[in-house]
Image (tube, rainbow, N blue to C red; front, side, top):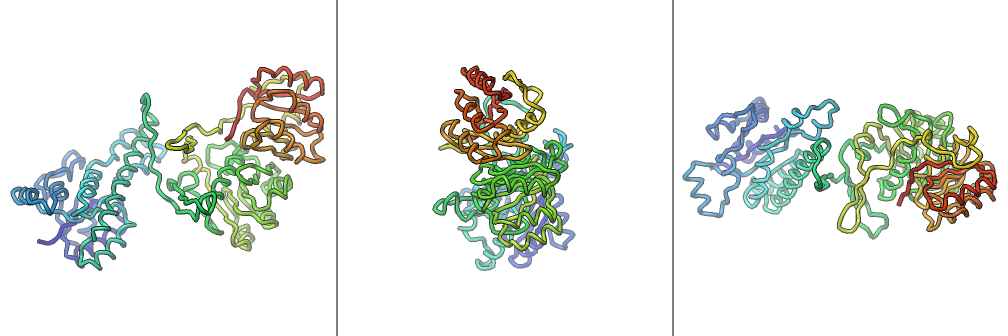
Length: 520
């Protein structure tokens, strides 16, 4: 009896060459249904339709095609079990040796902005996952293929094994099959959870491996990059440069989050673009600036701290053109991310062959969704991204002296920046440019001292932002001693009055935002 291969695929990539090899090279009988059978017949291959094989027509508009004992009995029967073989003989069921199935494109369907509930539900595959799981369970006797990327590997192995799929490979394919159906179910669950609320459901996702990284944060740590295609960094196109590392990706994430404060590209959900550039080192911004154009913003961001910028990661929120490209070649950088690069910019940057250039669209950013996920030992923490729109109209003046128009602009700029600095976070800024950043210190006055010292002789007349409230008046008094003219912080301390009193005594303006922005 010739071996039997059942083929029923949504993605027809590589289908005909696979079927030709199975039938013409290895002698398999081809069993298929629906559109897959039509493609094979049009290619001149002999195909038995599932409805002929089972003696039951497709019903319910194609919802029921393969859910039949003659299909699942043939897949699930153990060849080594005499009782199973007797059942097959009594029922006249042929064993099925290879199952080639991939599923309705549910994830792609729900990604469409105008998809309806009914259309999404209709794209939930039932028969496909049932066959995949059955074949994977019985991998001792059956090979299951769930994606075109497996076809070449399987055919190569069959060529060396007299037309059979080796046992070790069948086990690998079974694991990949269960991963495939688990990811499919997770996609359905996550989509439904956007509309249907349950009291305390699990957080589910199945994110494919995009790339095995050389190592993690350090060379002794293994690491992998998991990402959905076209979502977030999974939608980034690397135009040139060395392979991305774990630390590159962490720094790129920090740089992108910061530059998006000022809009990003066009066509996404970010606010209108104000040309901006961000330089990041070890996930903290060391230089941030806005300008009349991308090139001007970039020069100002680098000038904010050219020492720290060396070896940094740069994010730019508009297309990189020639002038900005020349600025980027003026020092050693690891990565640059932007919505686009002009052809002239690409030519200039090609001289820096190791510089990683990434093109990331606003649409890919929007597709990533609102969840911020971090791991802890044995679990996950899932929270909303801290990317809510800043609302200066809701801020209050706490000091006797209100800030001037220029100070208001500077305070808003500093506040946009400080929420992207590791706590305790202090930012000193003026005229749309960071002057000093104090990050990650165990006390707030320590961070303030770092930022004020970094600002140097530009500090006088600048403003200071703090991601958390001032627990004492020491930070205000330190800021005033350096020449800071205005401060902004969330407020909410039992000792707010002390800091406000210090501002009034020293002539500083103070704004309270009412919202904290810790970042750990």
